[in-house]
Image (tube, rainbow, N blue to C red; front, side, top):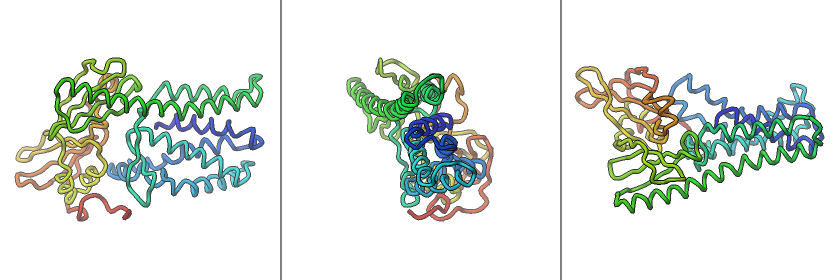
Length: 347
């Protein structure tokens, strides 16, 4: 989830705890920092585009790290002058961190909840990563709960609890709607006599109205849009070819980004891309992040999507270089570690 929603969740947590904890100075700042600090791992994006796939929503977003982060934040808050008792601050920080993890789990990127013991990415996909209605509603309730315009403390606490209830129930509604739409879309394809191996529905911009639909059938992949009011409404369809994960892992032995992408991508696809004379290129992407819906296509058109990488090969099929989603070319000068993917902790 984007940072503003995380911040709103932290403010609501602080206000819900304020009266019960005796209104200690520094509680709001502690909860706000705890609710947003796991995303400090985004700095790895500027080091290497591969690191972002490997380590964003990794250890700082894990259940294992949560108590250690909470204790560190509570201790740091006291050192910086907050009047929050250590174990009270630990509780407040832990609840705020848990809210961050929850909000990330209900989006499509996936969260390594069990790192460093497992690199499995947990995602139940009930929300799009930016949801204006959801975020503005949380911010409004946080503001009303904090404002002292004649409201008794008990009423302001109830407003904060209402906001935390919305934080849980709105994504839960999204998950239930997604599962319902997935079943309805499978029924639609069956009525049309259209073969499929797998149908997945994921949130798109302006969900819960727009949803991305990925249909896999043998080597083919179709990506389109659906809405819950009219499951059969016509939307543009993108025809793609499913990527061969074994081929990605083979390329990963020459440039680790492709082995990492084989691990990361939920719906990898491959398509021919422009290449220098005498070479050929294949662009790999994840259909989970395609600009397929009406909103994203209106805003970004066919611009590169998130997690898109192009392999450039010579006539013998050897990797000579690769391009990232920003169009930067990375020469391949030496093979990567055996097995593909960067060296990461053994889970």
